[in-house]
Amino acid sequence: MREASLMHHRVRDEFFANSEPSVCEWQRLRGAGVALHALCRPTMILVGNVVVDRPTGFSFAQDGDADGQRAFLIAINDEDGHWIDIAGWQPAKSWTGLWLGAAWALGQASVLQPRMRETGALPVWRSPLNWLRAGREGIVLIRPTVAAYFLADGGPLLAEDVEHAAELRRLMTRTGPRIFVRDRDRRAA
Image (tube, rainbow, N blue to C red; front, side, top):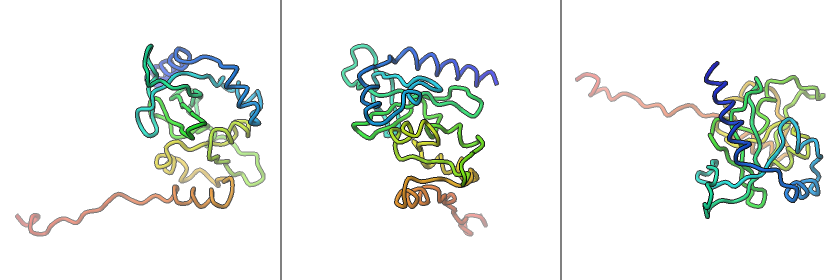
């Protein structure tokens, strides 16, 4: 429990230390159909300078870091409301990554929440923009292979369209680990 509390404070402190509100970027999102409440709640979406250093990961740019690029920063909470990671999103590059790699999706805490839709399905969005347009309802997969583990018993999923449903089916089909057979000769020795 203490470790979760320390992580919560570390992520929260880093989120606010490396970010700033940006009216210009917010205006672009508002023009793309994102409601103001989706930008502000439950935690305000901020902008900061990041260095993409892994396919789905980043570090915060340090002062004078020439590789630093602007990205939206989105706090990710667990089902108990603790801050567990920060997502960086660069819409122009269609890139989303994680600071710590502890999370697996935007909105992942909603997987365990009651679903009031007629189908009881969890909306899964292709992009953070679609997720924001939906008022942050549902999830956006950032680490699909990890998501498959958490969503295996997560109930029905609601895809954006038929192609997206097929893509999710492929992602959610987990194969077991590689299995080797012992060499009888070595076993006898």
